Image 1 (cartoon, rainbow, N blue to C red):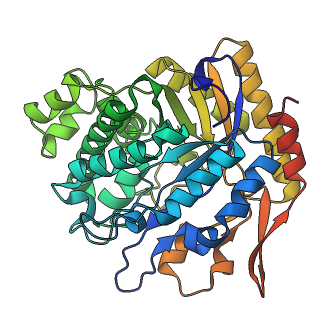
Image 2 (spheres, rainbow, N blue to C red):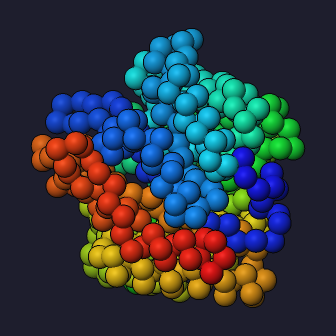
Length: 418
């Protein structure tokens, strides 16, 4: 792999691209499975797709393993496809930041994340991946992508399996995801030792507007603290003084649960923040009630680089680790995307100049992706395509072609030192 194993400590700003890797393979009545690699034809086009990352000048690629594919049955592993991908990374001297859990469990796991065996199973899977590819220099891992978003969709909104709802459901999902997170990172650290670089990633969320209105004050305060809840748990920051301890206790947590996290924290080598300027800032309105999520969304506000700067500073101060912008883009025209690329890269350089240890920038995704609404729709995939990528996806008789846009040249300009 390219570069130093300690790329996050060498003083540089490293540029990455991401390949959208949401996996929700379960499907009930009125639902379709989401497998972004299948939707984008990445399973067939991975060899050329990784070449696109090189063409864009990226050094790093945030890229996920489809657990449901490589472990199709309990105790049975199918490595053939993944072996080819990892060999391709080595051939290209690209460094993957391997995303191990991006929303979906294997089909054979009853009750999915609510299964009591989930934490130990995800730890076993993570350790096996780390062990299998350590000889190729694959040492950079994200144990769980966006665990709080994950907990909300699966545990409060009942939108994804295991379809839990309300405060109790959210509490259950937070606990299961956080335990799996801790056990997975510990298991991988045992395999990789000091070579391991763990990039913790969660969605940067901001809540603005009438947050102090009497009808919103308590809810808005909880949401602001909740943004950090899983990361606070796994890093051992949830003690008796943590503002969400009463909420956890009211929804099934006891002293032993809290002590388990406090006694053996796992820390980020890099703290990742995902920020989308048109979606990451939600607005409370006096007299208007929204539950949040896809079914009852609050309005959003584009706070541009001001919101980005706030969230990066907050993550750096809170966790004391180098910070990486692990996802960003705007869904819009090529010009709008180039404008945001220019503005967001400049913002990171300003943060670095002010002393904030920002080590990475990620454009997400490398090529267009398909919106999660595909799952509950009967429309063809093209109706759900999001214009987010450096490359456009275009339906042709031969399948989904990757069509280069002018954003590639601008990204490359920054990535190779512009």
